[in-house]
Length: 443
Figure (spheres, rainbow, N blue to C red):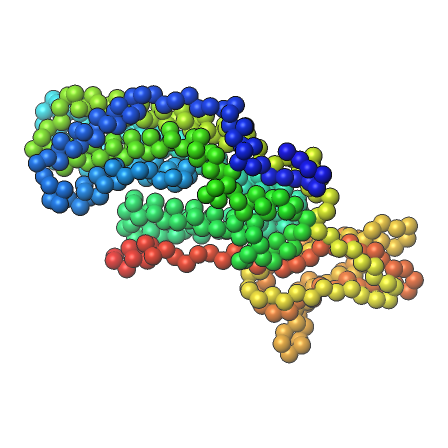
């Protein structure tokens, strides 16, 4: 969907017409049937206990199973991952009821064998969800980067993303090492996901740490900035994805919650009420249906999302025709300079320049220096003559920096200089989450 002015982001109506070609074959009716069956068994296991006398964990789990799943699709993905890990924990031998751990009867031996098989199935499902999330995240990021100028600026954004992801993983590791629960870890993971959204929105709206960067990246089409600003709006194009493909995912979220509820309730009452053969059969069937339908859904939706149009290609729209260069003439015997005021350490100063080709002299002197408040100069990049150069460095001092192009050595020849340069501030990481802090303090 193009216009004479260049790229145009797709609208919700455009996505709707596209998704008309990709209807999702409905989930098996066994999903709702088995979900209801397991829920009803769990309710029976809670009788004759009143809701107030249930253990807190059971009460909260019942409330969650009775609640509507989250609206956002990616939040449901995290919720499915969380519940799968909680179920895998329940299926570990050390978390079985004591009498089942002892396997003192043939029935317990058979049940133990089945539980190990079910755990293997959930382990496979967890890998499928993790792979889907990683591919989807990379697809969005690579889509954005496709429309970024393919020079050091895109490299810096990638470096900042990699550093940010390392910091996020370190935060998760710290939480786990301090004894944080699975629930705590996924609360943090979801918070980090929302932080990624805010960072993307900052880039699109030119706010926060990306204000200077967006000003600098004037070669990036405004349509891209509009796209990354609105991609996750509640009523934006992604809402069409949620309405089309959300319901089957919501049903799967509810199903995995109910499987966990059933297992947790069964372990809680195991010494009083033994699991019946028909209940074990329902559990086995439910796990098989959940795992197979989840994988089918993710395979389908992964293909649809990967091929979803967001705007016409950069090649078609000529997105890189204006990529942010300035041009000036440096007269013989003169210099040209650009001054930058750096407020934050670990900012990147970056440049890309060339001398437009002529018949005689095609080089120019270039250097970078830092000037402190007393006027003292520190050479950052030594003076050298170049026909062209591209580079960057990470600042270790705030203050004033000067990039100088020197044509003072030339007596007769002016130089046509084409350049782009700016200071790109570091991405400021969010403060450590209150969950991680509280867990650490409790240790």
